[in-house]
Amino acid sequence: MLLPRQLLLCCLYAYAFAFELEQHPFLPAQTAYKPAKRIGIVGLGTGGIAALRALKSLPLDMREDWEVTIFDQRHAVGGLWVPQDDAPDPPSIPQTPAYPGLRMNAVHMHMTVPNVYFPPETPLLAPRAHVLEYWQGLFNAVPLGVHDRVLLQHSVTRASWIGDEGGGYWELKAMDLRTNLTSGFSFDHLIAAPGVNRFPRVPKFEGQDLWLAKGKRLEHCLWFRDPSKYTGQTVIIVGGGPSGLDVARHVVRTARKVYWSRQEGEPELPDIDGAENVPRMTSLKGGSPTLMNGTTIPNVDTIILATGYEVRIPFLSAGGFLDDASHLPSDIGKRLTTNGRYISPLYEHTVSLDAQYPLGALYFISLLTYNPTGLTNTAQATFAAYTIANASLLGTRDDFRAALARREQRVRDAGQEPSRYGHKVILGYGAEQGWGEDGFYQDVLVHDLVARDPKLAGLPGVPDVGFNLTERWRVWVQDNTDRVLPAWHQMVDERGVEWEKEFVRGQRTEADYLDTMRRFMEYWDDRGE
Image (cartoon, rainbow, N blue to C red; front, side):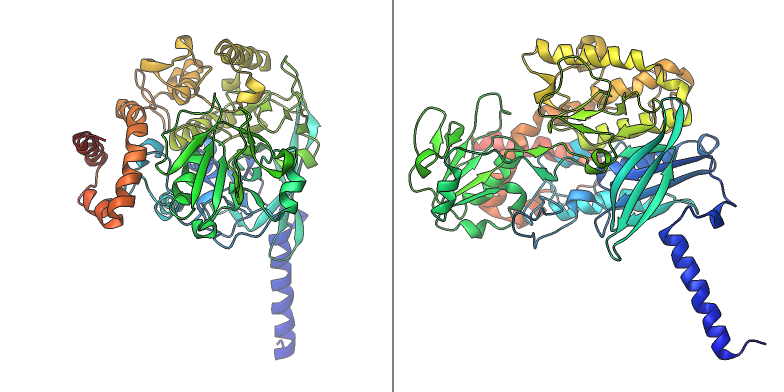
């Protein structure tokens, strides 16, 4: 019979051993269970959630005895939509650019995954908390297996392929941010879903040091949180994309004067009442902002850079499997490389074509920009899931490289350089690849699966023959979102959130929300704005 002290020691040893297994999950003691496939997902934002949903939605006979492990450095699921309102000061990098007043930059119907819609009475331009709730709800609905693991507050620091193009496995190192302990993990397939809004692109301007020495401010919008910080100031916002639009909309409410500095070739976004449009800022020579046309703007207090984000994946670079280069070669390289805007070579922004490991060993989800997030992430995740289950669906590396070359050439034909254009899906999908009535990027990717195996049609995530992932109503929503976006913001500014709540009261189904969108457009047209 064990004495109380002996019993206590046994319990402590058992606890310590269990803790050791949690920290080092592939110790020999765990060899009793051997999964058929080990899949690692890095990132639990919209891309990682889509990947997990697709893997767990496969028919059971396709995914039997798979083990899925998901890592995320945040304390909660949801990626950039998880709040961090007390952002650290530069040079420390916040974990998210999402500020308290952030809303979706498109109507929420445009951004959903197929057949799962926002809750009743959600404002058309959903606030941050609503978007977070939507994606967390999708995650919570996934039936995890007993051997699947969700490791929050774990930062993947290194990924290395042990083997060659004929076979091998991924070796990952991940640090538990609560204990600073690093553990090793092994996977047959790796899905990188880190998002694209983490590493700010901060251009260096001539005269910048003199500007800062005067006590002026130059900051990237990644750190933007509270517009009251700019009360009474003269502010220049540099960058004409969605981030510049959103920041300008907030800053005009508090600043004395706002200039919105944009250049030709940036997206055609609506003007902001109260913000003066000016050409792109090119220098701070002499300690004052100078524009592309030579004009100097005096008495500026703060410059906010909405200049985008660099495409960096440090854990792949640390392992030697993502090269960093300031310029990408004009021809398609053999090693995975990023110039900070574009990762190449990838098939349809999704499958790595690096020859150091087998085709299908590494996938990317959520690199895309200017895209309907729910649909494109779902398409990429569906493609990854089915090709992990059946590698013969991938075809050959040469086929995929040829497809990449054709798409990049169409981008050039449209007057853009792929290495600078990045992972946008606006260009590069001509009629022969399903643009327009026959489908969009996401449809091209899923139809490619069915073309390789017609029996996949109608399985989870794959439309029946003759149907697209993109329902026709989504095309109408996409075509009219830009009309609704500035008008809805203006109405909320004028009448407040109570008007917004009343306008969507009783709206429950997707048909209801489409009707709400039509009603609002008619209402706005009647105002004569």
